[in-house]
Length: 332
Image (cartoon, rainbow, N blue to C red; front, side, top):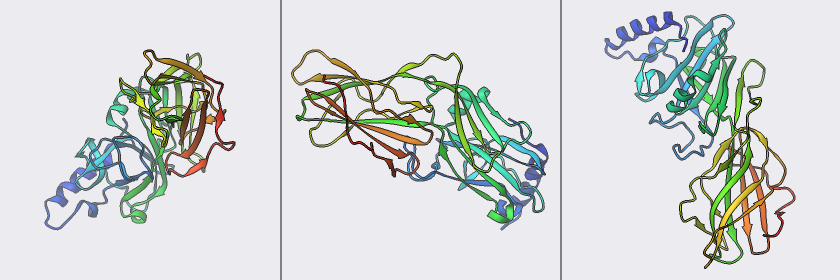
């Protein structure tokens, strides 16, 4: 982590003096804080439209400008004493002060669990000269490190324009895949497993704030081998399917962008002794950054039908609802 030491020395002396005087707050010495938000959070650890206040998720922030250069880089921000502040560790403030005068800074940040940052620290690379321009995570294996990492930027910010707090709207850097299912006869099917086949899972994420539009893109690692991904959360006994409502099937899982793959399900028929498996294709599409793809499965003894629904992961609003309707799959 690179941090400009001069402003921190100012911060320490100013804060020490301010805190020793009755009625003077850290805001009066121009502390640089953030306000991280996200429209809708899907991971179980989060709720509401913020990153929460328990530091399950924290922010790693960089600030720079052509005038100021590298002001600080990969600085931890966590929730401390009622707001998001620069920190030495989650929950422990280590304040940073805005530059003097009317100077403005650009900001680029990633939001994730502290463990995600620790596990990927050697692979997280900020631009050395202007760290608010780009950050990348090199050779990230999502099977080994299946973390939800979000990104945001805010440019040309000064203390007077935002009263010291930078509002940042975080977006997801991966795609989210979920499944739901029902059957034509009540309790005729127990879904025991779902596996997505031949997924690309190693690549480099590049978040680019150097152009007029903030972008996140992935590059598959040359020579990496695809692998199957089994959906977790179905339980040892599986899920007995209803004939009226779609039942959520297991946990969602995150992937890097790529073309849709085939799916294998494991199931057991009522009163049967053995499990059965069937592999089928799903409608052709490209799984994109920031999108949530749910595949609703309708099971019968004659066929499986798949209805895909695509939403913006951050909004929950439908972008595409399968277009041609249910997609018929070859008979079981």
